[in-house]
Length: 180
Image 1: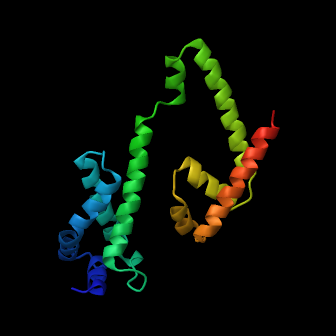
Image 2 (image 1 turned 135 degrees about the vertical axis):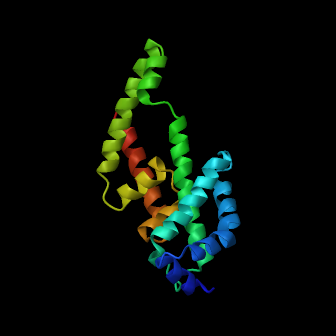
C-alpha cells in the first residue's frame, strides 16, 4: 500500500489499513516515545504510542503527503504526545504550593510568601510584553519548550526566537535590578 492509499483507507475507517500502519510503525513510535519518556513505565510509553495511532485514526486528513512522509508524520505526533505526557508526569510529581507551605516551618512560610509575591510581579511583567515576545517567554520558561519547538509552533525562524528570548531576558534583568 502506498501512503495515499493508506490515508484514504483510514479515512474510510478500514481497520485493516490501521492494522497495517500499526504493524509497520509501532516499533519506531515506541523508540521515539521511549527516548523522551525513558524514566516512565512501559504502560506510559504504550499509551503514548496508542494515542499517536488514535490521533491518526481520528484525523487521517491531517496527513498531507506533499509535506511529509507517513513515517515522519507519525513520528512527529509521537514526539509531541510524549513531550505532553512527560510534562504531565512531572507535574504530578511536584508538590502544590499549599502542600509545601503546610509542610514547612514558619520562617520558610514567610520566605515562600515573599517568593510567591515576586513570582506574581514577574508574571505581571511578562504579561506586559508585546506579542510574540510574551508567548515565546511563556513557552520557554513556563512550558519548557526548546527554541526550535517554539520556532515551529509559532512559524518563526529560530534566529528570531533566540533574539526575542535574549531581549526579553535583558528586559527582565533591567526590571528586576530597578524594582528595589
